[in-house]
Each structure stands twice: as C-alpha cells, then as structure tokens.
Image 1 (spheres, rainbow, N blue to C red):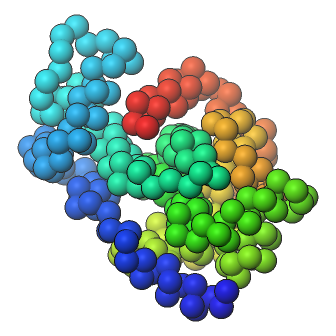
Image 2: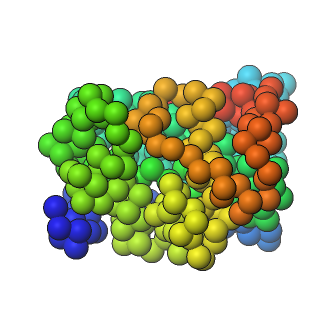
Length: 285
C-alpha cells in the first residue's frame, strides 16, 4: 500500500465513530490537580455503562468496604480521583471498541494487553518520578491502537500478517512494513491525530518501538517502550504478537534507569501490589 493512501484510509474510516465525549473529558482532566468531586461525578453520570463500571470496581473485594457503594460521589471518595479517572478512561475506551471482532484475532487477549500496559506504564512513571503519571497511564492504554485498526478495517491484510508471524522468524514490525508499507505504530498515531489527541500522546504511540526518535516528550515514549518489554518479558497477559521485537536497552538512560535488571526490579520489588492492580483491570473487560 502507498503510505499516503493508507494514511487517508485510516483517517477516514467512516464506520469508526469518534471516542465518546466522556473519554476525551477524562483525558483533559487526567492530571488536573484542581479537579473536584462534583466536576468528575457530573462527567461520569452522563454515561450509565461507565457509571456501573465505576460502582462495580468500588464494590469489588479489592476494597472490601463494609457497605454497598451506590453513588459516584461516594465511589470517588472511597477510590480517590486518580483511580476513578483511570477506571472511567479504561472502561470508556475499551467499551467503545469491544464489539468489533475478527475471528482470526484474540481481541480479549489484546484488550488485556492494553489494560495491563496502562498499569505497567503508570508504575514505571511512579518509579522514575515522572510528573504526569496519568498521562503515562493513558499512553499505555492506547499505544497499540494501530493493531486494532489493522485487525478490524484491513482484515484481509491483517490475517495474512497473522499467518506470516506464525510461520516466519521475523518480528511484527518487519512483516507490517512488507504488507502495509507502514507499522501499527504509525497507523495508530494517524488515527489519534485525526481525533486531536495531545501531541505527546500521538508521539508516544508513533515511536514506542523507537523511542530515540521522540522529540516532544522522549521520557513518555520511552516509558511505553519499556512497558512493552516488561509485558512480554514477564508474560503479563497472553499477547504474543510482538514477542519477536528486539528491545534496545541503550534507551534506558532516557528515563534514568541504569540497566535491564533495574527495570525488571520495578515489578519484582512491588510484585504484590502490582499483581493486585493488574487483577483490577480484568473487571473492566
């Protein structure tokens, strides 16, 4: 495919509606320190499905509150702003796309990969004292959007890609370039551009396998790069499509980490809490 033609096709997929308003609202307020209960509650109340997801998590065994939590205001008080914003964002984003299917592609595994990645990104951000933890969470959640687009709207080519990845000892990016003339990173970034996502998030998606190319926010892009590494190396979820992509550890210096073992230690040193957070994400699938 000619790359400009492919970009035009991606940005003009007519049967893919834009993300719900609540998703974009939460993206706008994700790191706003001045957000209050009333503003956040009002945004959530616009969507009954999202409201039910928030209440489901609030009433889950993870929190063991002694009585039923039945209002969003109370859920925000119990869970905290950051947790509620993350729940809303994840549930809204995944719910918007979850009905799209491809019989050749395990979408359940894919969504688990993205929700798990959002948690991994957040924990790396906390560990390196990245100031916008919520931004890292969003980037982890959306980073492989291009794979979803290929799997749903270019199914013939994508099914060919799946066949080749199972037979050939090549990484996903090389095969994507052979078939599409572009990678899932570029395809995802084109759609996010169309939806007017913040430039640093578009960049993180576009260069998450090549963080040395990032110029707007190299740290955010590098966080997502190593999120992918931890996801594959620690076998978090069962998403194997990217397992042959080689990780370059020279880029660790961008986020102030010395070596691979220190990176793995972010998970190993906080494993119990990490696994608990990963289990919570399954409530949103």
